[in-house]
Image 1 (cartoon, rainbow, N blue to C red):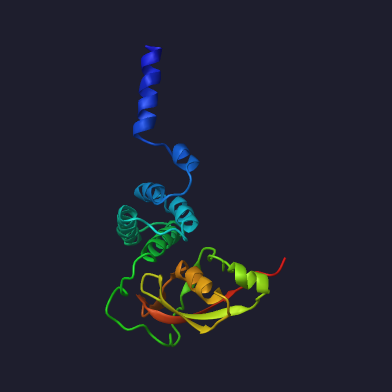
Image 2 (image 1 turned 90 degrees about the horizontal axis):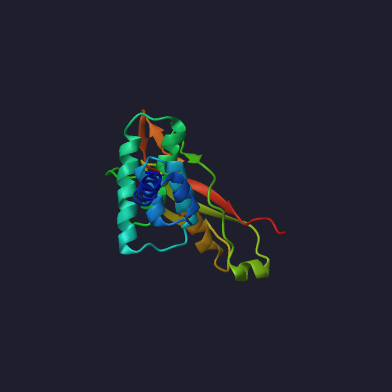
Length: 204
């Protein structure tokens, strides 16, 4: 009887992976999708941030699109702010892989004119300085104009003031993964143009 119970426990662990087993794995799009399916968006954020330089396969793109749908559904419901922020990060980190147009038809606003501005969520991805720029000792700040859309995701980033030796491209890659609470106008989220800065890390 005891042997049968042990066998049943092993089978259950194989069929339904526990959070402990999930946590033991290295980050993957599949694992991020499993976290999302359990509404564990904070765990999924950590995995997706760890995969920011990885190009997903077609099967993994389907996982990311499911994550987008799941996060949108979650955001349409009433949940604690911390959980909503994590769901929004999953939404934007997943959407960053797709060259889709902005949600909605309205042209982004150039000036907020007083309403609430976008607000950064979580710790932004740091600028990864290319080896050539690091060797040359390039230091400074890149100024980037983006559209923060109605969902708080960064779209259409463009350099306003850049740095040489590939730093501009690294800055754009970092900014694409940032997530914001969207700007608000008359109580509704709106897409806005927004200027952000990305600085090189200090020299060691």
